[in-house]
Amino acid sequence: DKGEFKHYMLKEIYEQPDAVARTLEMAIDNAETSKLRDDFLQRHETQLAAIRNVQVIACGTSYHAGMVAKYWFENLTRLPCSVEVASEFRYRNPVVVDNSLVICISQSGETADTLSALRDTQKQNPAGLVSLALCNVPTSSLVRETDIFLPTLAGPEIGVASTKAFTTQLAALMLLVLKIGVTQSRIDNQRLTTLLGELQKLPGQLYASLHLDADIKAMSESFEDKKSCLFLGRGLQFPIALEGALKLKEISYIHAEGYAAGELKHGPLALVDKDMPIVVLAPKDSMFDKLKANMQEVHARHGELFIFASESSKMLAEERMHVVYVPDVCETLAPIVYSVPVQLLSYHVAVMRGTDVDQPRNLAKSVTVE
Ligand code: F6R
Image 1 (cartoon, protein in one colour):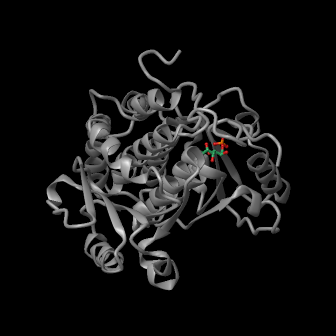
Image 2 (tube, rainbow, N blue to C red):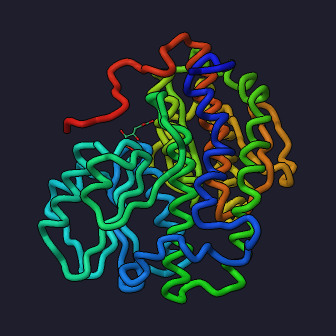
């Protein structure tokens, strides 16, 4: 039931504050916020204590969640983490090192390539292999075939374009990073307390970002007759740029590419002209000054900039520059909050162009064949 919403996708975008809050409650007790709940993944502590390497395998949007997790794992725990799309991983005879945690991320838990990649790693049977399903469907094949099940509590996702599954995957991945960090004494108490405090604010920040809907709808009008679009981000926002481009292309059928903004000079800058909209994920973080230089590069070549920036950055819009201010959020969790404006932008562009938002052409919700 879509209730008051015109599409399932919009309903699911709006469900994100609750879905993320539910997912966080698996590990965070609202009455005791200085530590993780004792019962969170308690049965698996011995397994998690022994892992020395993380390998993430997933497809599509779930792969983008894995890319964010790589930044988190390496930055917060210093455990090496690789991320790969399942359809490549499974066919290139990859090395799975001993004591690896293999994380398969899948909303459906039935994605053929992800399942096969998992089975291949199990067949290789490296010492100390631990497999984990991060999945939205408890009864799925993926959950049955893995050692550990970490659920996303998104509730059923009907729209083919993944929204609340993605943000709940990110929330659950952050909990997992913290759990492993604490179990292996790789995260100190102060950092843990700070991050837990920030996580508590997350549902409210997601809720506040939904208030940008009208501004983003207004912004979307500039995209109606566009043929092609770039999404730029750096650091933790690079995967969100890829996700924004995927969302836009799959539901509006506008060609879109996500790029790490630092790569502009190495090719895509040649595409930029006055007809090229460039969406930039620009929170005020450690990469902001570098990103500003990248924005100037495209602006100087007459590209039209659509910027999602922090409220506190007080970035001023100039000619050929549109700015929507996103609520302030700590750098580590910003990719979760910045997912919302890119989802809303894609949604409104698609509605304006009259495409089938919930059932885009040629796509299926669950890809059970390779
Ligand atoms: C995009 C989208 C797809 C899925 C991909 C993996 O919006 O939904 O890219 O993310 O097909 O599906 P799961 O997560 O079910 O394995």
